[in-house]
Image (cartoon, rainbow, N blue to C red; front, side, top):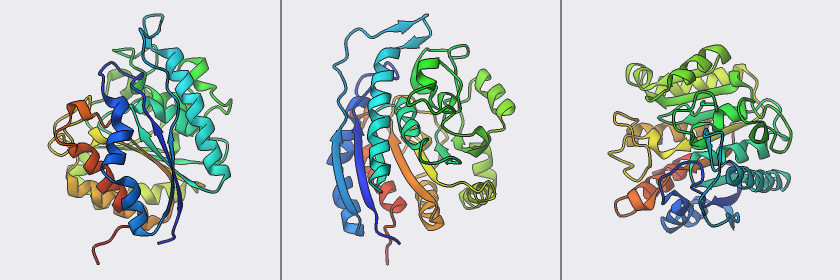
Length: 301
């Protein structure tokens, strides 16, 4: 495979939800050896460190619907700027979370450079809630909605380009916990979803073949992977804040990463929701790094 200049950006934030510990995710992933793993494959890795995240205080609530809105805006804006800089420097942005609200910033930074970006959302959840549909007020359940232009105006307009992605260019894989408002939005917006029913029935090979063929037909000019570790079954990734049983297996996940790498389409990625406090001997971070190995071209022979 082509050797890449990989720019690692850590985002130590837990503002998108209420369980403490996910802000330590970037450190756990680094401890699990992500830099060494990618360098061993042959890539040039530049670890840019973590963006600055203010210490968590009481947090802000807007209309009792959006928890920590100001803090999420600050983090998302800083991350968008860093991702934008990485792209301008011809680097491959690899973002380490942090909770999944960070995707708001990642996609805002990518949106100025890719006018027809494809997105694979590897997740147990759809993350398509809005202030009107959210059952919790947690913004980590909203980043995909924000990125297609729906949600709080200040989140939607980070770095001004609205929307960041087209809903018809989004493919969700592994969904098994979808809220009623999200189901309606999926239907309205034409978002392609492979639930665990489809993964079980078709198999991961068919799912990925169909997904990649669909994005090629859409003539996407880039492909971003947003991988929430709760997309895998919690048997393999116990250190996540919102585990949902019955998820994608370890081997299926590696197969998906290998097929993404072989496609030659991938231009950026983020791995989110590693929570060391909930983990067992850093297992979830180890899985994240192993998946990155497959994504970036690691082979057995």
